[in-house]
Amino acid sequence: MQKQIEFYENKLAFEMDPSDLYDAFEKSTDYIAVDTRQAFGYEKEHIPSAINLPHREMTEESTKHLDKSKIYVCYCDGIGCNASTKGALKMSKLGFKVKELMGGIEWWKFDGYATEGSKPSKGSKFVCAC
Image 1 (tube, helix red, strand yellow):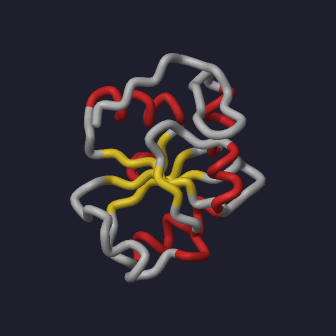
Image 2 (cartoon, rainbow, N blue to C red):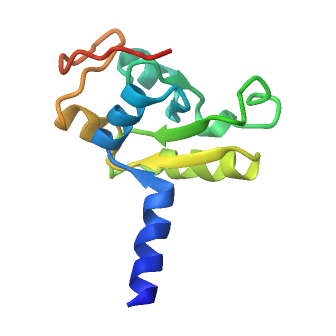
């Protein structure tokens, strides 16, 4: 039983679903969504307030302006893409507190949340607490 508890506690320590992220945005400014896709994907559509930091470009230099006291939630297209996993791993190695968004932007939209960009999806009214 203890191994099961540890497994699920560890899983929740490093993953969150879209409703968890939405709630985190509503309650705190400690969470920052990181779109780990290339710039053209971000420009087309992204989670409101997200920053774009493609996993292929993550380095000590490209992340030096980021606040290490924040929690960065990496996401990509969805379950068929692992850019968020690669980004979360790189950011972890660079010393950041990181979680991965389950289902990426596709599950964000599936849960009814709005996106921004040149081809945004309408959804719940999103108000950034920043």
